[in-house]
Amino acid sequence: MQYFIANWKQNFSLKEAQEWFSRFAPPSTKDQIIVATSHIHLGSITPSPQLSLAAQFVSPYDNGAHTGQIGAQQLRGLVDYCLVGHSETRKDLQETDQLVAQKVRLLQKANITPIVCLDLPYLESQIRVLLLELLEIKNLIFAYEPLSAIGTGQSESPQRANEIAFKITTLAHNRSLPILYGGSVDPFNVTDYLSQEYISGVLVGSASLDPEEFAKIIKPS
Ligand code: PGA
Image (cartoon, rainbow, N blue to C red; front, top):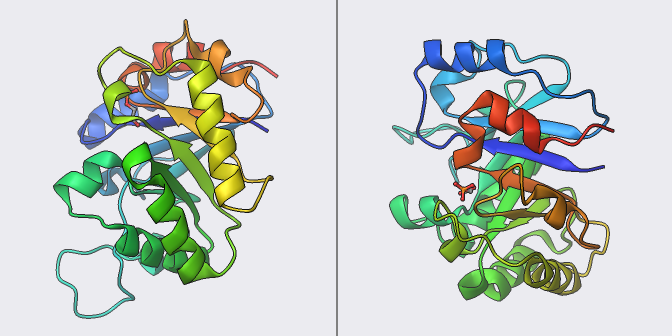
């Protein structure tokens, strides 16, 4: 199974999101298509049966006195997946390795699959902290997203991305975890990533904002 994830980031009003879905016509596939939207879209958009939704943010706390937060239990039933540890949330929202690990635990408790983003400066420390928090790393997806490739058009070489994906499975002591690549993926380079042994999908930012462009990234199966 391969994963094709659109990361819309902070884009689209509710109306624009509805328009995106009305124009999105993916090829028929048995693979998993996921759209990571802002919280304001959740509950108002009904994606097609072929498609799952992801949140881009979750609180590191259980429900309670945490003004401004949205917790895993609140997202339950609205999304099947949630991004955590993206380099932008690490920077903008001070998401640390420890907070990422807490979020992963709470998401898994709510039956939501975490998509944990990693880059080299914190790849080893993040996996170590996850192992301490969870004891065993399973029921999650990793995405290798080198900062130099995000939104720059300078994608990482597929061979290098494959080496890092192998390193992640080794450090996590779990060869069956899906490892994705993200960073300037487009319809022209996507096949080079998907043909790598340890890469099972892509996380797409800029190219996912255009529904026709994102549909071209998805391979029919
Ligand atoms: P990009 O973003 O495709 O625009 O490089 C990827 C991401 O940040 O998830």
